[in-house]
Length: 318
Length: 287
Image 1 (cartoon, chains in turn brown, cyan):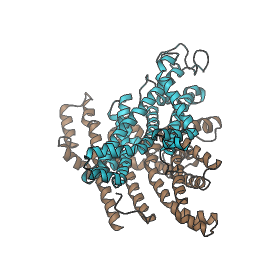
Image 2 (cartoon, chains in turn yellow, cyan; image 1 turned 45 degrees about the vertical axis):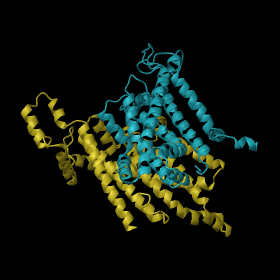
Image 3 (cartoon, rainbow over the protein chains, first blue to last red; image 1 turned 180 degrees about the horizontal axis):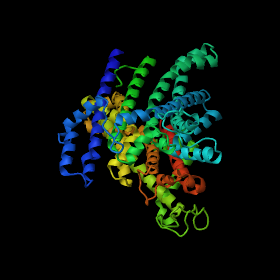
Image 4 (tube, rainbow over the protein chains, first blue to last red; image 1 turned 135 degrees about the vertical axis):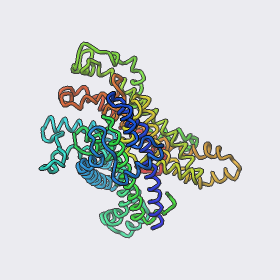
């Protein structure tokens, strides 16, 4: 077990290194900051050289890479081209709203997926099962932004029950998390994630229910309720952990689009603005940050997976 | 009856089982109909999709089947051309991603060792970046446009296919018929492409339908955000772009309902066809 975890962590480290290299290459592909400065006719040739030296841009690329990594390890992600603020500070001030949105969506979609997935599997081939599978298919197929538009149309415009935007940055004094701003974006994010997960948990649960040991338990004359809730559910932990890990990247991607639509003052909105304004240090920092979070989530999932499933052949799969 | 079954080809068996999945079969017909309409767009569209007509923001009616947009362009014609773009992006980027994934997955699975290690770590790396983020950044670096979107999606979508193929190869490699081919002295290339690859065909095809559904969704999201297909060229995503303003959302539903419904139809149908294929080709899985 310890060997497996060590191996997984080592692979994670290699992957992390690769992620920073990809991020660095992307950053260099989009162009260097001097070119942007140089497009301003007021900036003289000499000033450009000084600035390039300050930023270390006169050194070879591999040296720049190590300087950049060193800065990141000290929590320094550089400065925004547009606001001139430190990127790390910008990220911190936008982090909380995104965590609230993603956390709520994660919790809601997990509950939906687990409850409906298991219900559907237990009632397999009934009308209820088919309707749940159909709805899950639909949830998976409706683009999040379109669902958002439809919900805004009905709940914000027609009925006037919920605001479509207006959530202010939580760092402003006197603002708490206001539930009414959260409901629509969190619902859309949770529903777009839930569809795929319902089907995954349903199929995993069906496989569990068909296994021999459950037939043995049934043969012993144990009631259906106890069979499902005591024996089968314990094994359903494995697909549930898997789904948990699968959701994280989707949540990041979804929040980028939905924060834009709902004017939610989080990392997604910040990233989208940075993308529209070509504010590269901000884009690269959030890209790196989200990749690292996804990577960590994957590692944790793999380790949890090994913990909950005694039959996982350690070391062989990975 | 029995005799007929014995002589049934594999394709025949799959087709017979596919037809039993009624939703999947209906979706296939619908998808083919939509594709035909998209291919025939130049014939079917009543107007040129970029032509500016004298009627601005007109509700559906008269010569304008689905109304006109704020610039006076016919929504129905744009819908046909947009569907054409979405389907082209979906099919071509899926082909590209699947080809890359198959080659890398075969290599990793069959040769193992360093090749496997390197390919799988690269797969991990690409899969760690949240998908939309990577696409958006690629959209910043390269000038957006239909061919660029196809390339970006194709080069980002392959890791799932690679993992799937690698897993299949790993399990096939231990099967007796591969062992006997090796003992018989068949070349590695023959074993890879003539023995292993055909046996991976069903899972790859099923997985590819999922990739296509996601590609269509991604093109729509990207164009919706203004980072994808650029106007005046119509795409289902950029037709929805206008609905970000409340006046369009509430006052001109004909501008956004039709493209939205078309995206949902394309994706739902693709997913159902994939589901039916899974039932038809793989008797072991149950979802």
